[in-house]
Length: 56
Image 1: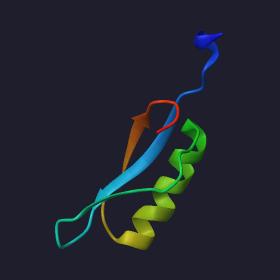
Image 2 (image 1 turned 60 degrees about the vertical axis):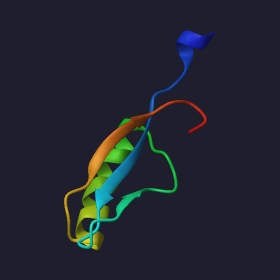
Image 3 (image 1 turned 90 degrees about the horizontal axis):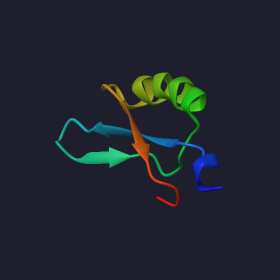
Image 4 (image 1 turned 120 degrees about the horizontal axis):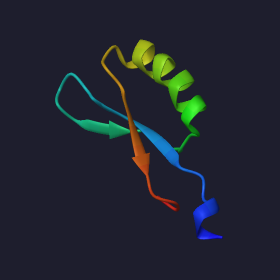
């Protein structure tokens, strides 16, 4: 059953003052790609998609 786990992703970015931030929720791959554009527009900076382990 452990092979059936879905990979989740968070979004990560660095604020203009150098603070590292991550999204409070995790996303599926397709949702992470969709929200990446939303976060980039909102934060005004590049946003990375970062894989996370189950439960993170």
